[in-house]
Length: 178
Image 1 (cartoon, rainbow, N blue to C red):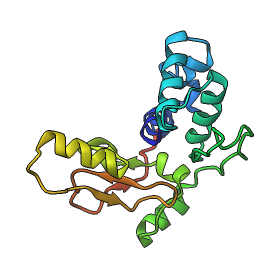
Image 2: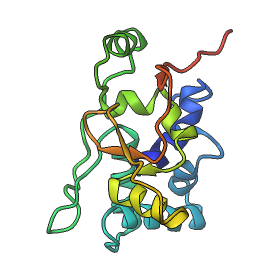
Image 3: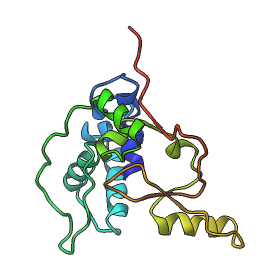
Image 4: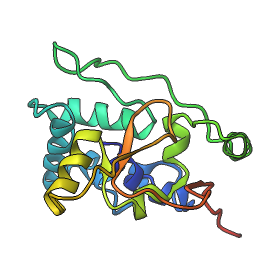
């Protein structure tokens, strides 16, 4: 779900829109506007993230909307963790995020999703540890374990199958010039 939220936030990072759902070609926005295929896809995405639990569109849109805002719900034994909307996330302050990046600090999920993250575009495989290991074994059964934790965020453990060299794994989005 984290990668889906990152993709839906592409137009926000590009300063094309202020909110992800306002972008005309956003799957999340299309689902909120009533497109049946997009609604089904959103339900499947959230269901997969919650260990294949059945979900209604209302639950899926609330959970995914929370993910867009940087709140990833942990599945609970009773089903979805909460039906209450989260408080609005703070505004993205590029100066504060830049200071954290320069200091080598981990970012909040909300901040990470609004930055450019090389792991999401060049990391080969990205996701939970078990998923990355299974994928690498499927590609090359004799290969060693190459899964590495991306220590970019406090909220979620994200692993990649290929470690990226260089120090620019996360950068602030480029702003459009007027």
